[in-house]
Image 1 (cartoon, rainbow, N blue to C red):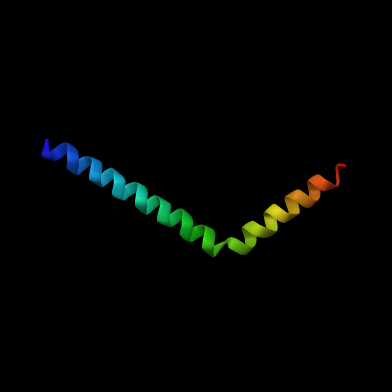
Image 2: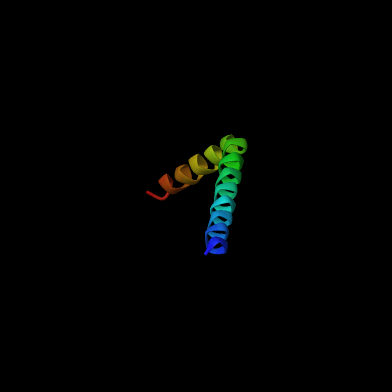
Length: 48
């Protein structure tokens, strides 16, 4: 049974690392992401 808990713990660590990487990339590219979203919505407003 000990191995099962250890494997589940490792999966939790992997998920935590992936979330941390995603948040880090979001913070690094925050300006680019904001510009992209704003430009996309401005383009959609042009269709009205």
